[in-house]
Length: 472
Image (tube, rainbow, N blue to C red; front, side, top):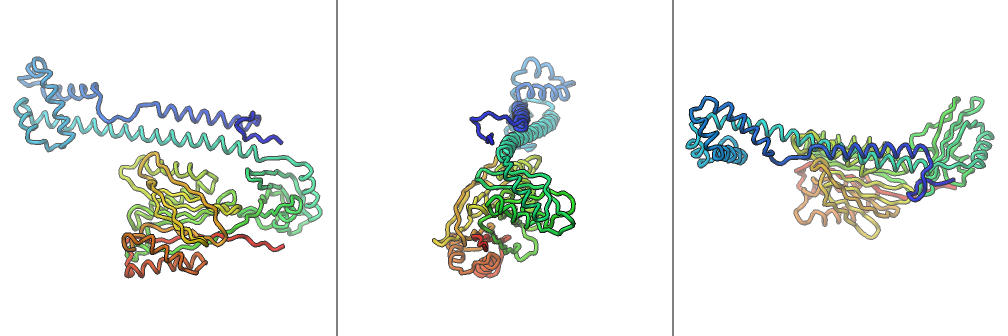
């Protein structure tokens, strides 16, 4: 079998070649978007001249001093117009005293000239702002197209490289299935970059037998000499018709999670949202988002963000791509800035590693046998700027390690300068291992120190990892 996912090797798969062509087209389209009309910070000389001509046509048409202003004193009149627009930009309709006096001295139709200048300038300003928003939207689309192109290339290469053929193994599986009353129509074998197997078999039970899916996984374990188990949400029993089932190598760890929360001033609605999600590739994610402000409006923002993350990560999008897409969606087309923080702990259930991803989130606490560690971030929340950069840190966890994520309301409820120290004492000094109990304990202790008052939405999300124990 030739592994094709290597840049130095020649790609021979037609599927990868086609995906590369599509990616090139996407990147060309993104480049076209970026080369279109750029953002403008001010008006061009041509636009200024057009505004000047439009105003003088309306105001000066029947004026007795038209020829004097527009011919003999054209330069002075133009300078008056330019100074007037600069003053409007700084002061609005309420001009400063000097500009008003100057305009009245130079123009016998000063009130009308001012009114027409204000209307023309404001209309031109609206068009400028609108065009800049269109440019911003194109920049966002270009960034997304680039992300899609990269993802398309990586996904097709990963998939192509992971498929392998093993006729003796396929024959052996078919024989073991037949002895157990399972008829196999086809099989496809995958191996990921870490050497873990994933096997897709199209099978049915023979003669109306009721055969559990886990029985098929046990037979695959025997054939491959690897511990195979049904994939997440796989059907429990093999049917009378051919169906494809997926079996993967069993993970070495499991994660338990718990949450405790309270709305601002004891309200039922909290602006914090959380998610505990099983992801493709044997990963488990704990996500906490703190919406701007509190109450229902903040809940809508953080809830929408968490729902989008659930959809994109569950579909297999890389974390960075998912966050970039969501950030663009939050920034584009909005008159006001509405942002939400993101705090993610993504556990790899095969090797015990944890990926901490943060965007504007509060400090995360990691309790290990050696004490309590802190994971911080200086990045901005999602929804603030067009090209937002999240921060990522990876750590190797041991069985029994616990991750504690909190929203800003938890820290704000504690005395200034002592927040992290007090939380260290609560987390490190508690013997509790159950995540749900520990989350409630931390929230209760914080409320106790805050005299029972929740000045902001408060959420504690706890996730612990433990090594699997399999019976022989």
